[in-house]
Length: 431
Ligand SMILES: NC(=O)C1=CN([C@@H]2O[C@H](COP(=O)(O)OP(=O)(O)OC[C@H]3O[C@@H](n4cnc5c(N)ncnc54)[C@H](OP(=O)(O)O)[C@@H]3O)[C@@H](O)[C@H]2O)C=CC1
Ligand SMILES: N[C@@H](CC=O)C(=O)O
Image 1 (cartoon, rainbow, N blue to C red):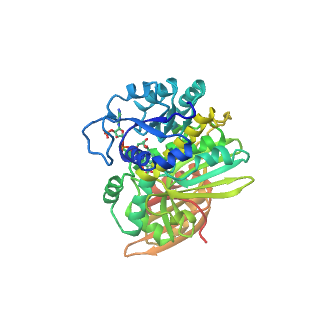
Image 2 (cartoon, helix red, strand yellow):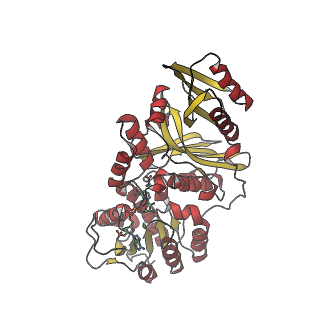
Image 3 (tube, rainbow, N blue to C red):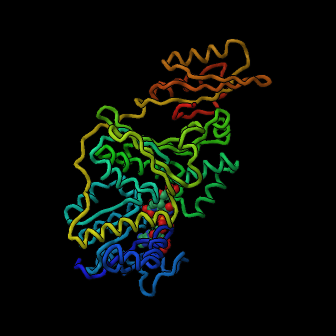
């Protein structure tokens, strides 16, 4: 790019995020020009349907349904990909890089499935590939991991990285909303993925966890390496059970470096209300990073929605533009260490188990014995008597996930157990 020439940008997708990128490119044009040192010009916007209603007015003549032709133009400096999904996004990004454009994307699904192919293409063609918006919306978390903490050893990343599920769980906890009603609201607010199953079943959070773990531990972690459980099975009874023990249910992404292996998982967990993650409300996200030298760091902010995500996209766009003007490239991906992925069964967790049992003498001892048989020690137990039966709520100490799930299976087979009504992992110590 010549120093006095405008930076020419093509945007792929004009939905929740793309429409806000287009809006900001127009509204912030003067500021962007000042920061980049040259005008930033929108030259095309690819969509699937020309006649769909838009949240933004796209300048006359810029909308097209031929995304491949747009990225193949020889006057495009940067392609912003906010279509989502694997194809055609992957083909379009690779074509853009091959054609000499740098790329900014928010596409965590693609990065978690096939990131290395994209990074290698960017390297091969000497172009930038930036993706800050792919994890935790507006929160700057990838650049700190890739650059600011590059001289430290990150050992753990723990966070709430999906806005839709946090919004649903928060509404269930604070407003007593039903699951379906809260999901519909999250969709209307532009938080959910095109297919909300990706949010609800934890696929979106798992993709983000894979990206976080790859950067934090300089390893190649893909979505398939992540143990994933969503929130579709979290019931009002689980939320109430958490409340009763002074906790709240959150969908957590947990990435850990254990010796030289990585353990990456996404699942709902009860956390004490005193835990900083418990106060993360609505579609906000928060990510804790623990590293050897720095200690604990926390990143917090809006994790979903068109405008916050567009903020991260524009930040990357300015960086790419500055690099282009300086005739340089940004920091590429690190050399990757070949680390084993620890199976979920070997990961150490804690369980909260609520059990309906016959209300007769000796029940507590029999339940305790079941835990002991699997070498799981009990931290707390609470008993609530009712007419003919009683409920026991047991919180275990840490054990491997395999020991804990074997204990639950054992309980389910016991004669005195009428029903195991709630099983959930517990994260963080109550005060
Ligand atoms: N929404 C959010 O809060 C966040 C989203 N992201 C990521 O940003 C990306 C976009 O998400 P979002 O804006 O919510 O998605 P939307 O579903 O709202 O928008 C997708 C856009 O892509 C267009 N599109 C779909 N298929 C094609 C195609 N084959 N060719 C050209 N255009 C196409 C659609 O066109 P049309 O309008 O004509 O249907 C639409 O404009 C995804 O990767 C998502 O994971 C990241 C962080 C937060
Ligand atoms: N659907 C995602 C959007 C942002 O990544 C979420 O809800 O977090």
